[in-house]
Length: 101
Image (cartoon, rainbow, N blue to C red; front, side, top):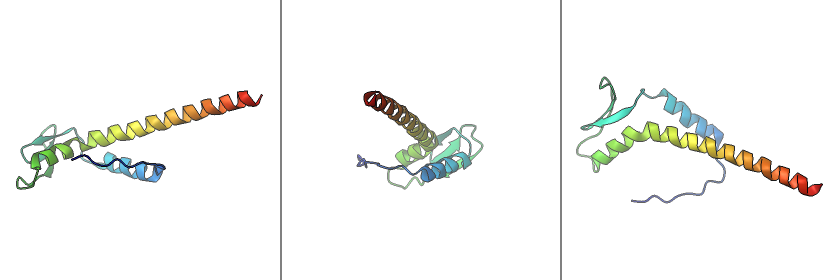
């Protein structure tokens, strides 16, 4: 099932900060699937249990197990894109200033 992509015009920094705070607070990973359990790599902590009766239990478990790494990656992408936007805005301002001279 493909999800509809929403156009994001204004990303709230406070929301990104809250997401990052939650990410930092989780059980350290990496996490992985082990049957119906989501476990830490060292097998000492069960992070979550997926009911085997759940529809798409294996896909749900895989999604949850990869979520910390995926969220971290997406936050890094947002930061990188913001830096690119800042650089482009500076270049545009410099070009506009040259045109004014």
